[in-house]
Image (cartoon, rainbow, N blue to C red; front, side, top):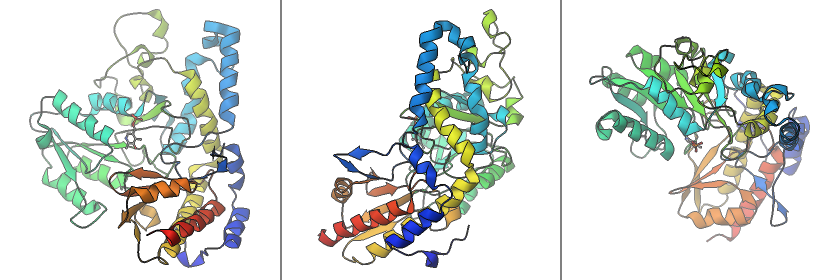
Length: 432
Ligand SMILES: *Cc1c(COP(=O)(O)O)cnc(C)c1O
């Protein structure tokens, strides 16, 4: 993982040479690259919405044909019968997050899934009711916490403890999180963090936080929206209690598509755990007998509510098949190099223009970040981001002052990064 910065060169020849040697280079062609206003853009927003895998169209057309040909019979007679379609996504999904197949299921949407998991894993008592979390969470997660806390009749300010970066710092110190957990040892019900913070790109030590949470008698859950498909994880071995993630960011499944969740086997095998039920989580041998009395399946599938949306899953399958073929290890290897290259090129150029300060706030240690770099605009504002977009660099802006850029290893290459640098340089040279 220790890729030497000194190996990088900010030149087209170097970038092209890296691309020639890249074992994943051919995957670029398996994705559709946007052309906006007649110009092929440099797409660095896989952290927000992944690009479309070419195979998505074929997969969805296949399912439309099945529907046209079979109608309701497609549930049992389609090539991938719809009644069990979600099961075809399980092995790949488990591979992405380091789980047993029994521990994951593709279903629902991210925030919805988290609410369902909180029903099971946030069961506060008068004494143990606090949730320890990161400051400046993604708003949906914050609303999740607030409404869950209120639902159980607790006071938001008392129950939600946020750990923030120290004064003048951008990143949260892990020791500070641990100290806060220990300081509230008897009152913490849940430690809930993003695996990767959406704003700064900081990776949290999920294994460590889980261990500390357990040591005080609390559970640990994670929102992996920015981690899944980005960094390798071992959720099972790390003993994480539960997690959920969307699939439209690094997993390239299209806007708002079916998400996924993880429940550790130690909980999944316990069908007595309280949960909200629906027929798809019911004993599948008896699902169609239409009986009373909910009898949850074991494993993550026991948290399912509704029958699976096959059209969306067909798209998700196109992407998961690619992940399965590549594997998180090779993906990560390229990701570390490519992100390091972006950091190098960016700093090389920004240093030539001292009148404007663009500061990368994402950790410089590759072990503490995925492929996203967050850039704080100092002495300028969103107009600079707008100018980047105009110039064909698709990044994204997060209030109040951060631009996020993610060179994703599946479809970005070294030349993209080099060309971004050229454009950035032109822009800075004329920027006042
Ligand atoms: C993208 C993202 C979400 C989005 O939630 P949806 O339920 O999919 O709309 C939530 N939380 C985090 C941390 C995210 O990055």
